[in-house]
Image (cartoon, rainbow, N blue to C red; front, side, top):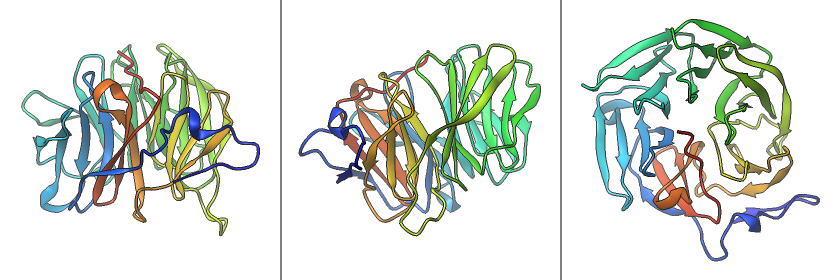
Amino acid sequence: MAQNFAGDMALSKVLIEGEEWELVQDGFQMTDGACADEQGAFYFSGRRGNQSAIYKLDASDQLEIYIQGAEGVSGLAFGPDGRLYGCRWGKNEVFVFEGNGSMATLANESHANDLVVTQHSELFFTAEKGLFFLDVNSKKRKVTDRITGPNGICLSPDMGILTVSEYGGDKVWAFATQVGLGASHGDAYMTMRRPSDGSACLGDGMTVDTAGRFYIASAIGLQMFDATGRISGIIAKPSSADMSNVAFSGPERKHLYVTCRNAIYKRLTKAKGVWHF
């Protein structure tokens, strides 16, 4: 199910008639950290208990444990060096996985949540106290603390614009990226739909397609915006569970994969996800 509002652009540019969400995997305590590699394989974290690991789904959705014992990972992103980077909300750290599966800490910050890596191996991440930039020498600086609960984070197809969703508000912020300098000129760029009771949107993980459309996991579903920041509509959640993250994966990166509490779902679209490297 999808929902268009008066004045919205049609979701038919992305959604395929007759295609719905398909359950891929379930039985987890909590899933998060959606991302994809260059071949379109999907990765996610099992954040809790004895399921703490990084999991990989290949093109046929066959599940394997990619890295064992990766406890509490809330965000994942590949870098141009082919390595997998991450955040651990409960451990207050940003890290990179070494070849042996161990985590090398790059920075510490209270409730580091989600991240992206640029083509220059610079890193942006969200945390409890704001949006942060980490240069190639792992020198950290705060970009802003004006965002109400910074959470999901994404780069535009050309990596010139950085976007950040609000968990505690209803805005998605946009910043101009600058090599070596981080990001600047930040302002609220998109306005998410709130739940009917007016509560926070719970804007969470984000992804982008090759047309510059942004997809944001939220309390009421997957909110889609065009490249100008105009909302196109809302793709209903596949279940009543919280939707925490989203990524384009699968063959040609044409499937939207989402993490919904204990399960992974996917949906074939007309769009195609971006591989930045």
